Each structure stands twice: as C-alpha cells, then as structure tokens.
Image (cartoon, rainbow, N blue to C red; front, top):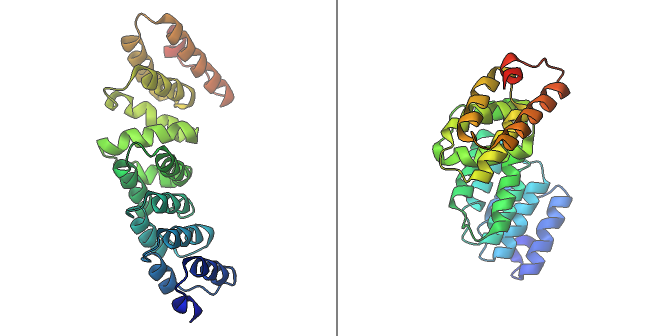
Length: 231
C-alpha cells in the first residue's frame, strides 16, 4: 500500500495521520511505524496513539516501548499519549520511565509526571496502584498527589509522610501542608505529632498547618477533632 511504498519521511507521517483520521489505520501499521528508523515517524505514531481510542492492552504494550525509546523526543510523545490509557501496566511503565529519564530533560520529566497524575486522578485506580509502592516510586507518587488535590491523595500522603525520609525542608513542608488540608481526621493525630517534633521551633509554620487543617475540615463540613483544638 501507499504507506509501505513511501520512502519519504514527511509523506509517511502525512499518510499515517490520513489513515488515522479515516479510521483505517491498523494495529500492525502502528506497530511497524513505532519501529521506523526516523524518530519523527515514531514520535508522530505515538501522538496518533494518544489521539485515538485503541484497546488498553495494545496501547500499554506500544507505549511502554515508546517510553524506552532511544530518542528523548519520542519518549515525550509516548508519555503524553499514555495519559489517555489508564491501566495498572501503563501507570507502572510511566513510573519506571520517570526513574530512568535523564534529570536534565525537564520537559520529559514534566510530561511523564503529568501523565502519572492523570492516571491517578481516578480514586479506584489510585487505590489499586498505591496498595504496594516501592520506596523509589513513593516520592514520585507523593509529588503527583500535590497535583491531584483530593481527599484520597491527602490520606495517602498523610500515611506515608513518616516513610519519606531525607526530604529537603521545603519539600517536607509542602507535603505536610497538603496532607494537613486533605487528610482524614483520623490521620491528624499522627500528622500533628510529626509536625510538632520536626518543627518544634517554627511556631509560624505550625500555625500555617493548623489553618490548613481547619480550612480543609471546613470545606468538607467536618468537625474539628480534639487533637487539632489542643494543638
């Protein structure tokens, strides 16, 4: 067919998009295009996957390969496409890709982070993925929680704060503030204890945490528990 006959990179990319928009592109053509020698062809192919509605299993397999591509631009396209396909294998591939991404490529790291956030926005999926999180992935998920801004993310972070050792002071303070605002009342005892131990001399920061807790409780129409009143 015309796709196989085309040796021109730009023409091949145009044909891929035409086939996609006509709803005529086949899975085997996608797979073949992801192995093309041109990084540009591979990158556009992953964009097509992101724009389409392919089966989750197929997309996870294809995008996992893209997240390990030798070209960082291709990895970025695969990362952005992955946001459209929520599944445990896809989320695990994204977490792995974040760990392996070069720290100098801020754009790639940001793209992966955004896709992990979009994957974990849904409560059931979040709870399934976070049932078992490695120490390496814990910090990645903790950072993503700041962008989810839900009670279940705050609850997770409140439970895990004690495990997040060796954090920079500003990052630890950011996590504490988030957990204080979104965590469930039953976690506030441990949270307040942790804050008072680590920030004994920083009364101003403790006051900010108390205000965050009160604001969060008020927004969720919950009563102020004794531990917060005493604090």
